[in-house]
Image (cartoon, rainbow, N blue to C red):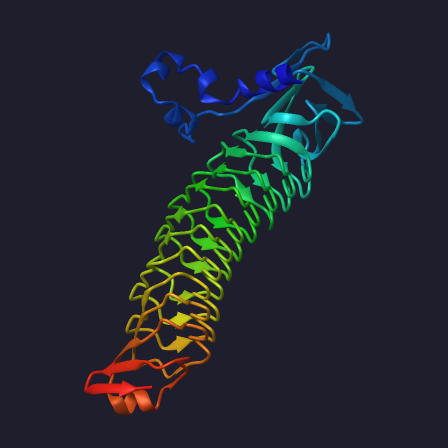
Length: 363
């Protein structure tokens, strides 16, 4: 089986490419993260004498092909194949999703991985070849031994939620270069994930994309994002650095809730609304709501025990239960008059000094 997978991977990894002459001048990391726009297709050929090239084994029955343990079935069009399942006794270790199957002269194009197709399998690494355009809902859910994913087609998309949900050994994922949407729960509970780069083409993050990725430390969100859902980083306990894109207008609910290592976060001027529980149970020490914020949800900083200073403006009229158990908070800056502050509904759990534009208030 090791021979099987080694042969398969040589069709896709840069170390097996025709650019070997330059490989000595590249560092191993750069080789591995090859240009996603390169020709990264892979083909399995079966001739009339049943000789197989490009894979270890191919079985054909009733129009379905089992190639190195992965089952490909007919697509919606003649000449198309889709990944529909696997043989659990044969699919172990590293794997390639092939882009073409040439079976006795007829060439099939592999176009997608269907819903639940490889869910729960024992694969350890997977290369999804160029030409495979769609990856279905929960396609790799519960692949607990999967450590690395590389998607070679720059225009591939995710067709549903929880694609890599509970891939608890996953440490690295290479996303399609032109991807526009990261779907809900994409890396939910991938608690060893440390390395993922989000392409600048992404415009939408659905809810819970990185929820409970407890090992991820830094994430750079591109400013191309204009739409995002709730709980993006909920439970990312090792997260120390993240930014808010400049084209969104709100911070969603539970944005960094329970990110207990997050000490600093800057909210840009484009933000006008803060969702419930957005920053709860973090390690923030100072926190400022920019002047354009008008709407603030409940419990925004609840259980932020290290928070010492909070700044906000008079456009905010209510912050309900926002600072429960913020025992270190003593310094509040309010950009408005004392009269304005008196009209603001806000709870503090402990004695604080509020510095207004025209003097101080003790609350």
